[in-house]
Each structure stands twice: as structure tokens, then as C-alpha cells.
Amino acid sequence: MPSVGAEVPLRITSMANGGAAIGRVGQLVVFVKGAAPDELVMVRITQRRKNFARADIVDILKPSPHRVLPGCEYFGRCGGCQWQYMGYPSQLDAKAAILRDQIQRTLRLSDEACAGIFPAPIGMDDPWRYRNVITVEPDTERKPSFHHLHSDRRISITHCPISEPSISAALTDLSATGIEAETTIRASGEERAVAYTSRAPKTVTLRLLGHDFRVSGGAFFQVNTRPQSGGIGGSNPTMADTLAEHALRGLALTGNEAVLDLYAGVGTFAILAAPNARRVVAVEESPVAATDARFNAQNLGAANVSVHTRSAEQFLAAFNERIDAVVLDPPRAGCSPPVLAGLARLRPRRIVYVSCDPATLARDLKTLTEAYAIESCQLIDLFPQTFHLESVTVLQRRGGARKQ
Image (cartoon, helix red, strand yellow):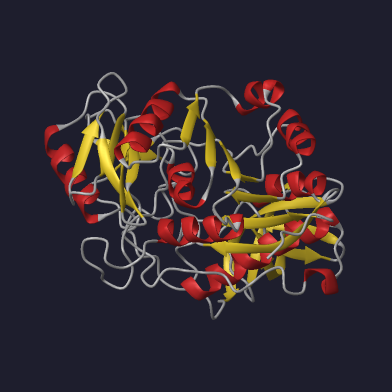
């Protein structure tokens, strides 16, 4: 087996969660960044453990048919994107395989059990110019910059090809004027972008499924809200619309249900579910986002939505009312054990889990599937050119099928 410093040829077989490519030297699994499936590369071992190793590319001996030229001049220095060197269909295939592998291995599912659970991934028509928010920091010359991929240095930038055009325009302006502190640039529904610091946050309006939501500085909102197929004014669905549609469909509401929206943010899922529910309880820990949720509920006429400014753990510890359906959209860390225990106690008929990390999703599903069956796990690619992926998993309580 190769030791640290050794150079060995490596055939890339797949991609790993976290963005690295995977190859094997005998039984040793080797992770290497910057390689693509079906590629033969010469690598240098940089780290060695009992069951795996990490390596850097020395040379590409046989390029993959999936390899393309990156679409950004900063790629390879900026750490924001990892997969620009892979064609977009290959990115989607890799993400779908990662999602299935994480869940199948963690839950120890057979191929037969997985059949029908994982539909084809949903990708973008144009996998560029989609992000509606970025954060930059000043470099030594006060230019807006991103973190360097391999160091603490800054990379000054004048545009960002994965961000909406209004953000790139704002970056160009800020490059000329300079910035003094960490700055957020956020596109708004008015086809412009606003820049602000944490000391002076600004509010924007973002659209989801035809509804305008107020989003204050510091509040979370899905990043991919550019209409597909060249739509103007939101006439065509965005990837965030597609995500919301799948979540709402998974709740399977008939108008009589009590719905719980944990990690509610500015109230998007709660408010969108409200017309088809008896009542909706939204729980959000961030006071800023919870204030937005209350405003949005009132502004959009969702009188049956109540918003609670508490952590999911605190809320569930004291909540004992009947709940029929739950939507979860936790941060990357997933749901804590107290949250999963609280859901087990409430025993909702259906759970819709919106996840941005397949590893923590798989971990939480291992607990949830003690009482629930997975109906579907849909990959929706909100983050092209990166290894990040979003998914919507629908679960039905065993023995609790909804009457038609």
C-alpha cells in the first residue's frame, strides 16, 4: 500500500459527499479533489489512514469524457465552487448517486427497497447565474473578495458567474468604491441587488410560487430564485418554486390538517401550506426571521398561521397538541435527537424533510424510519457547479395511511 509522498496512478470510479473523487489502490480508498468520473490520474498521497488516503493530482493521464473547461476565471482559487470542471449532466448524476448511496448504506437498504424511492434528479436549464445572495470580505485594498480555496488569503472579484447578474453588477460597483467590512449582496424581486453589512442590514422582497416574501438581512431564504427557461417576472418556475411544490405535494393536505413547520425561516412553507390546512404552527429560532414570518403571514392573508420564536428543541419539549403533518427544513447539521424524539411523540401521519446535506439526512432517516416509510427522496439541484445538493424526502407513518 502506498505511503505519504508516493505517486500512484488512480482510476476514478465515483464522487464522494463533500466533493472529492474516489479511486482505489487495491483495497485502499483514495479521495482526490479535482478529478472526474472515468478519469485516469497520477496522484501523490498526502494523507494516509487505516482505511483510506487523500491525494493531490500530479497529472491527468486520461481525461474523463465528463471534463469541461470551468466557466469562471476564479475557479481553482476561489473556494465557492468545486465541480465547474465537470459537465452539468455529470454533476447531476454524481449528486444522485451520492444521495442514494448515503441513504442506502446508512439505512442498509437493498436495491429492491430503493426501487421507486429515488426519481430522476431535477436540474436547471441553465446552471449559471442563479444565486440570489453572496457574502464578500475586504482584501488589503478594500476590494470585495472571497476566501482562497487553499489558504486564508482573499481573492478579489469583480463578478460571480453563479450569481444573478444584478449581484455581479453590484460587485463591479463595489470593486470601484471599495468596502470596509464583511458585506452581503442580495438580489431582490425588483431585479436589482442591495449591499449591506451586519451593522446596517437591509430588507429585500423575494418571490416564491407567485407570492412576495419579505426577507430581512440575516434571515434565510432559498438561494436559487431565478426563473427557468428565460422566464420574465417569475412567469416560469424557479428551482426554489420546484422545491416548494414538492414539499407541499408531500404534505398531501386536504384542508383539515394541523401542520407543523419547524425551522420555518421567514414562513415560506407555513404560509404556502396555509390555504390547504386547518391550522399551521411555524417555529423559528431567529427573532429576525420570525418577525418576517409574522409580517409575511399577515401580508399574505394567512390568518391560520401562528409563529413561535423558539428553537425546535424548546418548542417540542412543551408542545402536546395533535399534528397531522410536519415539514422540516433544518440547517446542515440536521435534526437533533430531542427534535426526532419530539416527532416520535407527536406521531404525525406525514413528514416532509427538506435537506441540504445527504449525510445528516441519512442519519436522521435512520431514526425516523423506525416508524415511517420513505415514499420518495427527490434531488432538486439548487446549487449547480458545487457539490452541495438539496433534496425533499416524503415519509408516511406506517399503519397511518391517509383515507382518500
